[in-house]
Image 1 (cartoon, helix red, strand yellow):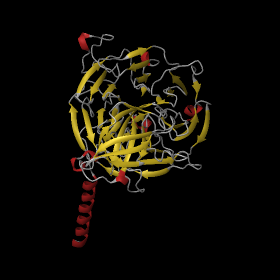
Image 2 (cartoon, rainbow, N blue to C red):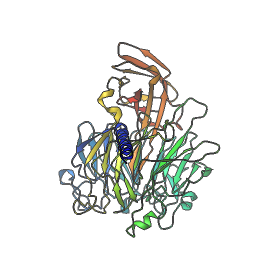
Image 3 (cartoon, helix red, strand yellow):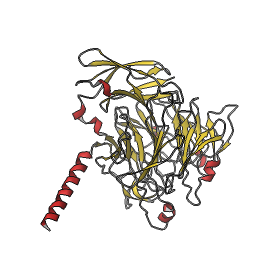
Length: 533
């Protein structure tokens, strides 16, 4: 008995040490209240974050300036957060932006589409300039867009796909040759009876210019120009839904070896809810969420999903590409589904997924937050490598008392372990070019940087991250490209110059603003903004 007890105690000790060693990252409360619940977030190239909730929540805790009111509501339902000064400025939306979509145009403007009620066919434009506010265009869309997904295309226009009751797609801005509404039968085929499970579909631009579209439990490769399905992928084993309201999340894994004749592209889908979970929630039963991720090489001649197990079940979580090439899984719950009051058991510990590790060693649990981030939570990557986290309102109004998960107005930052001071000697600092630099396709680019400690030249790379529009567990237009270091020249005691080749085409990197990082031994610099034209 003593021997068994000793072995058990030793096993528990070793387990505890392993978890403690693996845990990383730090949390910081930035704002006790930003005044609104950040249901949607987008970082712009002036290092300010536009966030908004919905106009029919009731009065928010942020007043519109100068006593202004919209439809007898004198409070804001959108705000601009200044990362540098940690301050919030109220913005004015004229119609309901609830459960909408968006993307940043090549010129840096946020183009936001759809919403609910009077806002369902509107386009709203936000220009990143001092004192600017939303501009709205009525009837700019052909169809009601509520729970739709947007993606920037190689030609710089947006495609808007799906939404409640919409099994079609359209483009913005309109042209004479593409001003219509185009049918997408795949969305009809994936529309689950009574549950949908195909809203906010996961959409990624493939390296060949086609779109990978995942809805419910399966995916296609779609040529939107010819209106043709190029490839039909198998279902993920088990056939459980992964899209809203059984909300999992997904990323296109970092694109590497960009000068190769054929660039590999892999999609990772994590979490979701078992079949029937949404109906069971309405009966008072909160089913445990899915504990699996599935990964697929989308250009493989025989593509197959490879299933992995997460440390914890997750629904309503977010997935972010970090500049070191890892994936951060953050926010969400471990039972229930998306929807009003539908989630239970918040997941407080983020998880880092290392795609280059072998299966079984890819997930690393991180230090927990103390704030549940349930339905309507958001997370985005910032220029300094932190992750901004906000939102969480599982109620149809602002509810702060006598509820299980109060409406959340607090804003946090999660600092991944690579920002720890112990890595300061390894961390690069970009000296040139200056932020807001303009770059071209398929050209040599020299980046001057400094490192305090010893430089390991074989462990230097450059990454370009497209800032994403985040809402409802999906980051639209999220993309990270790894540029291989071709030559490194030492300039001084601690200064260096690395030469890379920029992406060759708009299929790899649609035109627009990107965060450019120098990465050394898996430790990223703060980024500069570059605009690829």
